[in-house]
Amino acid sequence: MKWLSVAVLLGVAAYVLNALYSTWLPTNYIFDAKTLNEICNEVLSRHDSSSENYSTEALLRDVRDALAQHYGDKYINRYANDDWVFNNAGGAMGQMIILHASLSEYVILFGSAVGTEGHTGVHFADDYFTILHGKQVAALPHAANPEVYLPGMTHHLERGYAKQYAMPSGSFALELAQGWIPCMLPFGFLDTFSSTLDLYTLGKTVYLTGKDMAKNLVKNGKF
Image 1: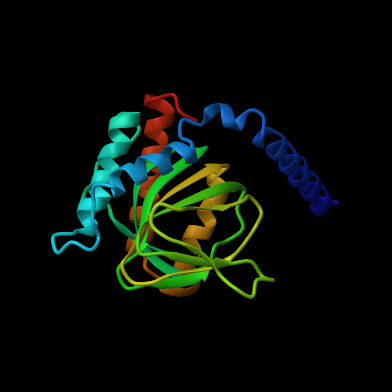
Image 2 (image 1 turned 90 degrees about the horizontal axis):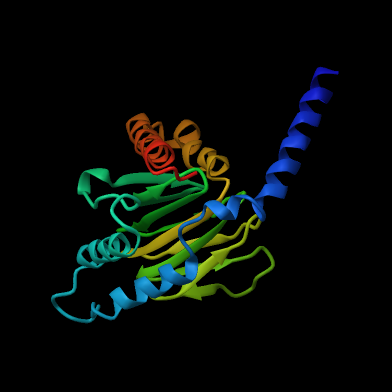
């Protein structure tokens, strides 16, 4: 009976969260994928990747500054090398910096200097991945050919779907996730215990994520 009660409670919770997903939860969003894509493409127009003076870091910093100009510094975090962390999830390893984290949304810069490949995970959120440099390839289980996303293009991974994906070395993107963000966190943390044992990175990631979620909830009133 105990397990039955737990199953019923979990079922009720899932039903409520799913009902709120398309009704109340979107009222808390301040970002939208179309605007982020437009901002990214405007910044990309100022950076010529074929130029000998091209710098991926300068591009990433400019994207962060353009977001802060549009949404305000209170919602967009600073860009600091010390705030970059490794991210191991779904068998893929990359680098990320958190620009915004709240209970309903996050915005990060994500990529890999050396390249990566893995599983997207299955999430209670919609994920929008706008390529800034390099590319991403992705595929659903039945696909014989990959989807290819190049700079300026946005890959939308819908809630509940999963894909295999890969990014060659030097590829970076701006990622927006909207939904029940706490439900996504285990995917980003569990590889620490099953594989990397990198407790320092886990602790730093938890600290930076929790700190920003608390700031946006308490100081900015942003769920």
